[in-house]
Image (tube, rainbow, N blue to C red; front, side, top):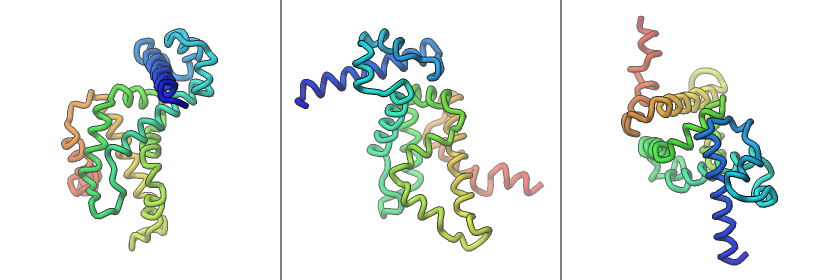
Length: 196
């Protein structure tokens, strides 16, 4: 495809995405209630143009979700375990990215009841490294200890992000990381309960 056609396709794609998000935000419609006809009317395109780009409304949102995760991974993450990888910097970068696109992520969390889904999508490029970490013997506990801890960890991050978005992102990414760090350290609510 030549460049003018690529640009036209990209512009059409963006128009479709904008129309869908207007329906979500302004009309406060759940994804399940948005129709292709509504998106086409709002975008000023015909249905065949929509179907050139997407199979249905769910395919549109899945591709937007994947695109956002790819952008986050491109901009933020160094391979886990590399010499230049820094956990705090990586987490704060992820929080900053979510802050930058908070309207999208607020909508995203309003549509998914399983809030851990975002972590699964964003961590997909690191699947092999994560599986290796989860399969390690922790040297204590039960045989699948690392898997349980990973699940608790990702659920905690997801819940933290969800609460932060719900509260209007009042805390900075650095402050949010500090909350996260305290939640897993000796100052955590769990340790406080256990000390009583």
